[in-house]
Amino acid sequence: MTTRFSLILLTFTSSLILTTGLVQAEQGSAIYVAENSVLENTEMNVRDKNDTTLTPENQKETKRDVRITTHIRKRIMRDKSFSVNAQNVKIITRSGQVTLRGPVDSKAENVKIEKIAKRTRGVVRVDNQLEITAP
Image 1 (cartoon, rainbow, N blue to C red):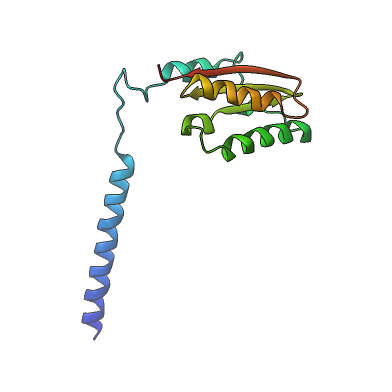
Image 2 (cartoon, rainbow, N blue to C red):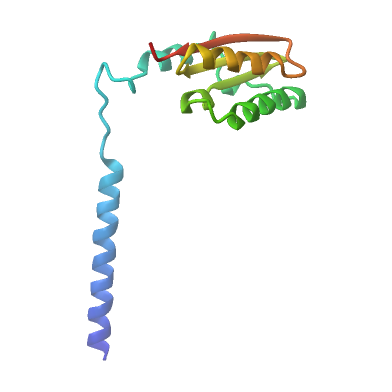
């Protein structure tokens, strides 16, 4: 009985070690993006690292600014006509001034998101930095 139990335990442990090794190997595999790929956004990331460009980390934590950002985000998410890009735009509110950043698929989405922001109570100014990705 002890030998049988030992063999079962050894088999189970070996299987667990092999499975863990495979999972770690998959997690460590690199994803390579072609230089001209749509997913390649190194230039945008470099631009966002300097202190002149607002990022979501610059969002003020006042109740008013959080409420404004939340209201705009909810309105965008409720509108099922928006693309995934449009639903994921960055909304940064500082003292009632809203900055919109990120890609959208069309001029219509750009205009519609800007209108949502401008019509939100408490918004003083909207800086529309949305980028249209589709031709």
